[in-house]
Each structure stands twice: as structure tokens, then as C-alpha cells.
Image (cartoon, one colour):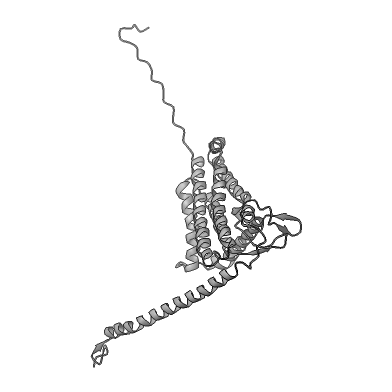
Length: 310
């Protein structure tokens, strides 16, 4: 009997039969997992509703929303030297994490790069290549420094915005526990990023056209304000919605996973792209060298007919 036949049934038929036998088992497992998840969800939801009246809040929703903008109530002691906004601690934390990761990648990962990249190498190359292509596409004449800045600023905005998803806890000066917000959800951090991007644009204008580049840059004097408030408004809106959802226990079950993650990831991606795109576009405009058009020579007037030549 040939090898591919077994009791009159081919190997392909056996595989089909096996597939038919395995498929219902997989469906049963999926249904079982869904039922377990729904049961646990029902238990936790019932507990959240029952505990709503017993949960003591140290501040009203009005104070919580106001403090998310002004940071007057919940402040953190900075090594006992002064009291600072929670966003300042977030900014230092994100900066330290990024520098530490960059050091580890430079020492242990980059020397082991291969011609056929793995998943992590492909992720790094894609992230760097995105900002490099953005710089080259909008500023083809001067883009080396621009690409490095876009990569640094984009990484800081994305990681800093996603930082609030981890729910890092800190103790305020009043003894309350709070989650550290995104660094750029504070107006000071957003203004810093907008002004820094404007200075980079100004440096491109000086490098490309000297004092004329300064004049081109100063024409858009409202650019740092618009970039700062666009960044601040987008991140603050997400922070306020998340704060509102977390304030009520009945809403703080399952919903924050959808609202918090959705708002945070969307704002991280959109704001990273918007600020880096604006910076690269304006940098390319002010640093582009315009060649002077040659002056046209004045045509010599031809003598009129009938005039005597001296």
C-alpha cells in the first residue's frame, strides 16, 4: 500500500478530518474563556457599585479637574528643596528613562545589528527612519540635525504621553496618593516644547540664509504659541476625560481601559506627528537657499530713422 494512503483515506483527507475535529474544541475554549471573563466582570462591577458609597474622596470633582490644569493643590516635594508640580517629576522620570534606554541600546543592541534585522532591530530602524524620512522630505537641503531633533522630540512626546498609562504613584505634600500625569499635560512643559522647536527652526534659518533666515523665522512669530497650545490642549483634554472617568468608581471599571488607552495612544501618535511635521516644514522653508536672479541688462536704445549721426 502506498505511503500516502491509509485504509483508503489520503493524508489530505486525514488532515481535513483532523481539522474538523479540532475546530469545535477551539470554539469551546473561546466560549469558556468569554464566559469566565463575563463572570469576573460581573463580580467586580457589582463590588464597585456596592463600594461606591463607602469610598471616601479627599477632593471634589471640581477641585480635581481644576487641579489637573493649575496644579495648585496636589504638589510634590522635590527632595525637600521645594514643592513642584507632579508634571515636573514626570518630566524628569521620562527623561531619565529615555536616556537610560538609549544607553542600553547603544551598548548592547546596536553593535549586534545584523543584515537581516530581527523584530527589535526592525522596530528601532522603522522609528528612526520615520523621522529621518520626515526631515529629508520637508528639508532636502539641510536635514541632518533636523532628523536628530525630530527623533528626540517625537520620542519624548510619545513616551511622555504614554507615561500616564503606567499609573506611577507619588505622595503629595498633603499625604495623598496621586498618579503622575504626562509631562506635557502641564502648560509649562508644552510651552517649553513649542519654544524649543521654534529655536530649532530659527537655527535652520540662520544656517541656511543668515540674517535673512532670521527675518523669515520672525514672520511666523505666533508659531511657538500655536504649537504650545495645540500640544497642551490635546493632552489636557485627554487628561481631564481620564480624570473624570477615574473619579467615579462606577465608571472606573473597564471603561478606563478603553477611554484611557484610546485617548492616550491617539494623542501620543497624533501630537508626535503634528509637532514634528510642523517643525520640519517650517525648518525647510526658512533654511532653503534662494538663488538671486541675475539682473537683466538694459537694452540700448536704437537711433530713430532719419536722425543724423554725429
